[in-house]
Length: 123
Image (cartoon, rainbow, N blue to C red):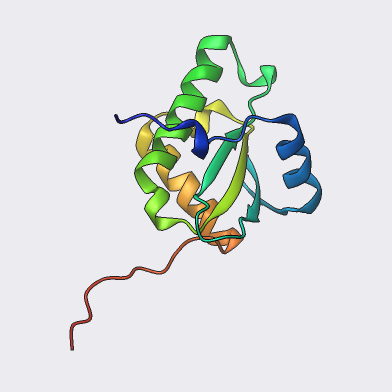
């Protein structure tokens, strides 16, 4: 019910290679981010997370991935239809869900895939 469906995950090696080669690369302190806009109306934002063993133990790597997936799940309505790859380089930058959300939104804004707020039109 609250999980991230398989249709919103990037998991195929060919998809990773395609995004690496043709996507836009953005970096901020401790993160590298690749994105490629999905063409088509039915497509949804998708996420893939790459975590190196240099980041720490399996427990720390899995926690990092969980936090980034949850930040994506809660904020995907703010993102354009794009395929996103995130590569965190420092575990100290993700102590909480708030930090993961802040990093995701900062990266997406810098990459230009963050949607403008579409609130009610108040005169």
